[in-house]
Length: 487
Ligand code: NDP
Image (cartoon, rainbow, N blue to C red; front, side, top):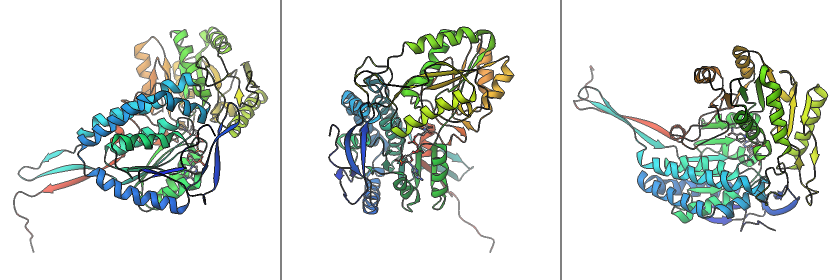
C-alpha cells in the first residue's frame, strides 16, 4: 500500500486503531490503485477523542496567546519544509496534479497556520467606560470544536479549521472525508511535533455517521463543516439539539460577469481557472460565465482554443494540468451532467466526454467541457456539477447580468471583469455572494474572510472574522461603588 498510515485515527498525540470500525479504502483515482485501508471510528474511538480533547483543551487554553501563536508558526514552518512529501500524498489521495498540490494545498495550510499564529497574541476584548464603574469583555475559547471536511482540499480544509480554532485556545476533533482520509493525519503529526499538547488536535475517520455523531455530541461546543448544501443543512439540524455554534462552508453555482470593456485574455484566464482548476472540484467555481453579447464570440473562441491546450494525464508528472475526478461516483455524476447538457439543447463548444490518457486506462478522467447557448433554466445552469463543466451565457446590459447572476438559491462567490472601476464596485455591491473578485477569480488569501450567503453557508473562515467564529464573548461588569437595593 503506497500511502498506508500507521493507523486510522490520531488521538491524544498517538495513532490509534480499532479494527471493529467499518473498513474503507483510499483509492488513487488516476489508476484505481488502493493506496490505504482504514477503519471508521467506533463509538469508543469517538469517546476517546472527546476525553483527550477535553484534557488537551484545558492545558492549551492555559497558555498565553503569544505562546500558542509561536507553536502554530512552528507548525507552519514544518509544513513548508515537508511541502513536497505532503503534496505527493495529497495528489495520491485526491488525484489532483502535483503542479497544483505543490502550490495550493499544504502551502495554503501553512499560510493559515502562520497567519493565525501571528494573530493569536492579539485576541482580546474591549474596555467599556461606564462613568465610574466599567465593563470589559473577554474573548474566550468555545471548548472542543469538531471539523468535518470535504474531499477536494483535504489538508487545506483541515488547516483552515484547525488554525483559527487552536489560535483561540480550543481543541479540535477533525473528521476528513472518507474519500481523502490521509493528509489530516499528517497535520496532526506536525502540530504535535511543533509543540501543540497531545489531545488538542485529533483526527477520527469515517463516513457521514461519524460526522453526525460529532455534531450530536454534548461535550462538543461547535461544528464547522465543509461540504454540500444538503449535508450542511443536516449538520445544522443535528447540532441544534445541543445548541452548538455552527460554521457551514457549502456549495455554489457562482457567476463570472465579463463586460465588453474587460481585458478579455485576463477574463478568459479567470474563467478557465475558475472552472477547470482541481478538475472543476472547487466550491467557489464560477460555473456560470455571463459575457456581454458584443464580445461573446471572440471570448468563446479564446476559451475554446485555450481549453484544447490543457494537458490531461499523470497527476504525478509536474507538466500535467488536469487530473482525474476524485471518485467513481463523482466521475459518473459529471458525465451524467454532460449528457444532460446535450439533451437540454446546449451547444457543446469543446469536451463533453470521458477520456483515457495514455497508460491510465483505469483513471477517472473527463475532458474539460464548455457549453454555450445555455439558458438560465437548464439543469446544467442551476445545479452544482462539481466537475470541469463551464456554462457560457450572453447578456445585453448590466442590470440584466446582475439579475440573472443573482437568480440562484446559492451565494458563495462571484467575479466581475471590467476596466471600468466604478462599474466593478457598483456591480459587486449588488451581487448576492459572500466572496467577490474584481478582475480576478478564486484567489483566497488567508487574510481575506471566505464564506457564503444564502444557502451557501453561514459564518466565515480565514481573516480576523474567523476568530469570532471560534470564540465567545464574556462581558464583565465591574462596580466601583457599592451594590444597593431598594428593599
Ligand atoms: P458532502 O456534503 O458529501 O460531505 C462533506 C463532509 O460531511 C464529509 O466528511 C462527509 O462524510 C460528512 N457528512 C456527510 N453527511 C453528514 C452528516 N449527516 N453529518 C455530519 N457529517 C456528514 O460533500 P463532499 O465531501 O462530497 O464535497 C463536495 C461538496 O462540498 C460540494 O457540494 C462543494 O460545493 C462543497 N464544498 C464547499 C466548500 C466551501 O468552502 N464552501 C469547499 C469544498 C467543497 P463522508 O463523505 O466521509 O461520508
